[in-house]
Amino acid sequence: MTQAGLTFRPAVAADVAPAVPLIHSSGPAAFDYVFAVPGVGDAQAFLRHAFVDGAGEFGWRNHVVGVLDGAVVAAGAGFGGATKWSFTLAAARQILGHYGWRHAAGVIVRGLRVEAVIPPPTGAMYYLGHLGVSESLRGQGAGTALVAHLLAAQPVGAGPVVLDVAATNPAAQRLYERLGFAVVVERRSTLANAQGRVPDQRRMQRQTPA
Image (tube, rainbow, N blue to C red; front, side):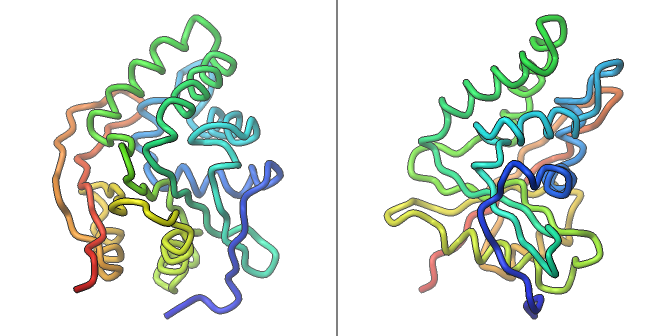
């Protein structure tokens, strides 16, 4: 089933208010573990800063949004291994600008730890990330439409399509399995602090039709 009336477009900076909660919902525990700093702000505060900045993994330029009846109800991103260094530099600049020298180093260290559990794409890999749909639309085809839109935007000649799903989110895993993805590896996580515990992650890869 596809959600009637749902359309997709590139994100713009003005989408920050509805888009950031959707992006955060794609991995709240991991985002909170890395970006929530007591006395400074929660993870969504940093994500808003980075989204409006526009650059890097969390910037509006890296995202598409789904719109229904004039409201942003879905968000996601598709990107490849060629983005690694530009995204790393943008994230470092955004983290320093948001947290200042006192807290930036800790955020960066936690981010690197999470990358051991949720590795960024490499080479020709096409990675789907930050997939979020409004809670009221879940189970109504919006997630399927979001993934289909990102798959249609896959660059010509790109390699395998991959994504990560938390082991604690079986509903999302079932959705991706219906769309042709299969688990290829599971990475255990022991990462936790007072702000969040990063669950085990399953890397899924889209299987090429026979």
